[in-house]
Image (cartoon, rainbow, N blue to C red; front, top):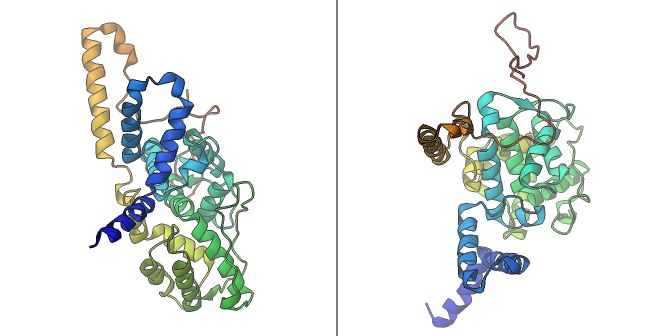
Length: 331
């Protein structure tokens, strides 16, 4: 490879990995906290910043514009959301869309409601938006809606054009990159039960992927596997298939498989270490025993200002009824 080719590939390589974005953000953070950082500590500041980027903790409590600006940021936010609130799935609690929005805003204060609504629609379809959802159902629906948000808006516009009989060549694909969260409106499923022809929709998706190859889009091969299984499909069916596709989940690389949703070996080992340290401290200093948690489950994140109601899955063991039972252990 020639020297000229190497010089050309360097900036392209850095741009593909969004390095300029992180350098600009690091400089902005440094300027914001310049009064708190000594000149001798600047190198340490940059080291800690890029370590946090590598570990995926750099998006915590950041504004939404930063959280969604790169693929790595989106995957990092998904991983943080799962790790912080996985005990909801462990406890079997069911929450509403608004309650999941509260959890998201604990990690990103200005997280837009419309993305949460769209994720809830994947789970609930046309049901009331105050229905209860399990953590796992919401999480994997939220993953594709958040990570592929621009792609799904374009796909929804194409789907509606196909329903109305517009020519593929005249489809105008919108983009949400220039729209603020308040300007983006949740799309809804068409009342048509037949949907559109899957091969025709796939051809449009193929054109979209070719046109926006640098955007955050699912692998075309996996899209083809989903779309070419049946002669026709609805957009709701397309979204459901994306959220349940193992290959899509692996390509994003943020969440474990659904069967391993409660497992986080790294975090569990860290928690075991913390508990062991607290236990040793309580033996040496009995006054610190009050700091120990009542049980090993210390992964819960502090609740929002209003307490989320604790709900259990419907009890199906008695007479087949599906009445919702309330947690009897409320204080």
